[in-house]
Length: 313
Image (cartoon, rainbow, N blue to C red; front, side):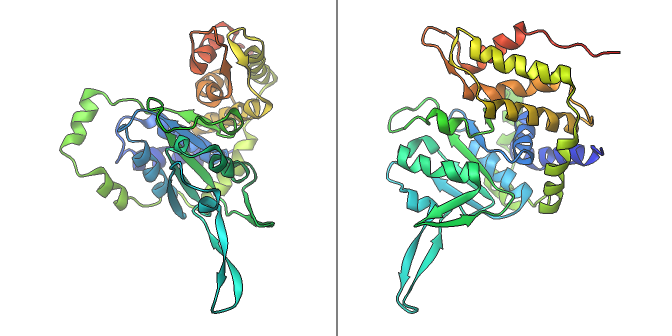
């Protein structure tokens, strides 16, 4: 298969978003992986690290319609999905679409919404459809939900349930910039102005082709066994109360294929799997109460103990 288009996609996305967010090429690349895999992104980090700005830049890079939802405790499911209202001029009920009817949906501070409103995203994220008053509406592709949440401020927040966390393809974190990187943005133009000036660098047809082509990336039996060894280890680990679901194993398989293609290869190597394991799996596990490690720490510990298959001559 031809992997040049994947390499070019990765570089175009990184270059375009890099005009706004400095030094976070790997996070940008990972969001690109999620997009090609038809997955959704949960970006969790401290306030002021550029979460919303990065997702705005990414949405600009892929074009299509964009809607931002600021989640609050009083937001209702109908505020997200839309409602039928009575049109006095026509004498009929008309459906008014909610902000979930967009190609790119930015769910800002998703953990500030009550569980009832959070659950309104479940069908949308998994089925790519919205049901209102017994009527089902299919959503246009590409469709991606990119959510943010603040991990340090717990007042007035509602932690996402495991069932909803599992529907996010990846959970990512930006972290602070280095002093040199942060210094470089002090005198430059305002990031909001830069975002507004960004244009799309990938089209819908190109993205559809990438979503079809990555499935041709070969995964040997040894690498597939390696993936399953990681998944099985999470289910058997004493440090975890709950291991990775079947949805998680499929996500890791697909992410490894896309990463290989972005590296210019038509086959997956164990390093691709290790590179994607933490962002794809860490939020899908539940650490045991006696464990001093979080999900990412446990996954990293397991990766260090599971034998890596060697390339056969």
